[in-house]
Image 1: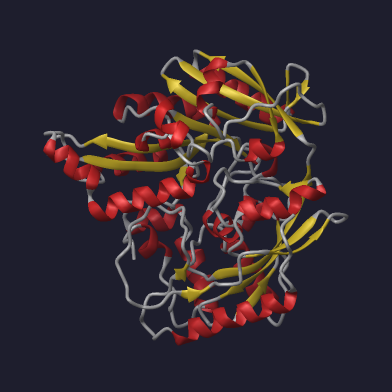
Image 2 (image 1 turned 90 degrees about the horizontal axis):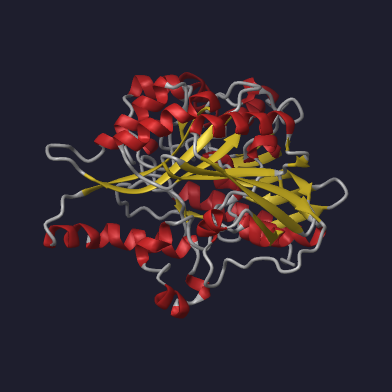
Length: 470
């Protein structure tokens, strides 16, 4: 079990963070000094020291009776799960990658197979402390608290999808969900995307399939006429032999090979992390011979991410393409979501226009009316209540066509998603014009909250971060 962080130690860490913020010269960029990142946006270099977040990466308390946890903002989900799972509890939504932080998932959104019933990570936040641009730590709650309850509530509502433009969470109190020890999986194959979409909607409505409860659902589209939904049922039934995908076996390949499977709840949570979905293949980690000698401690998404960062700095892949006479490639790393009824239309278009496979599929809905918020609570990433959306994730590169500019494919995807009534996450490259961006991500609402909590405009704006890469 993870050792809990004493509250006094937390308070000292918060003070160090505040002091480091105040030491940054006015006009200099404000960034976190952290080793790991799950962003895929390049940014202009800066010599300004980052915010001191040391000592803010742990769990403060777990209340097994109330099913809540107080968690520091830089705590990774790996460490968070290690603290809560011994109590038979996990966060309501556990994003797929171990080093995503709780604060990052709330300010930058997160999604996983329980999102069709539990929404997104910010919907299970009960309260949070945020270091704002004013240099003050403000407690934000759904109904507001402190000297200015209205400002507190507005900060709480606008923090999701703000990506640090409103501040950084130092502590979050979240709801937890009770879970058993194992997960039973059913992999359903679909030759028709429309049938897959109809099945997703039915499961999201009923939370069952073929008479069996469904606790988690996601899927993979391998080819135009070969897609799968994986239905997860949490269970205390002990399997004869739970599968292990941290060794030679590779999880995403098993989806095509098996109709049924069993995992421990722990291995289910991190089933995608070992091979970074399927992206570890780009580094040779799926080659059986290399995999046998590849240390397990390096079969992790954060290690692969560091390799990507190294390539970006040194231009290794670009130089190899030039040597082999290949065209340059555009990086296409995105998660988008569209209403489930438009999913088949989008994926068919994506096949023709982009041609990248596999792609990940994950349904989501607002958690209301059971969650602490409501549809109006999340202006920066508005979703319709009662509407089922399907997240489509695709991560790789595509060759650039003659005469094309880097970014053309990503911009084309943005236009198509917008036409279909969807959104895209902002953890990667974005190309919107300012007017479109502000319309999709509530620029006016964000500006109003920023004017209160960052009156001197010290924190980089959301458009500047997401599109201008500052």
